[in-house]
Length: 67
Image (cartoon, rainbow, N blue to C red):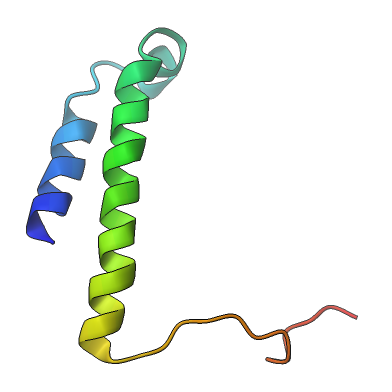
């Protein structure tokens, strides 16, 4: 898990200049950041859930519907 955090932070640090310029001129860098963050999220979703022994799922009867 630590390597995913470090890879995400490294990818973010590698983006030079303001984010607005990266959006315009270096989208490949931002895609790399997005991919690293996605990997981190997937790792957190699986490992943390496993460590905490919890179940994550969808239920349409959990009382949060908007009627």
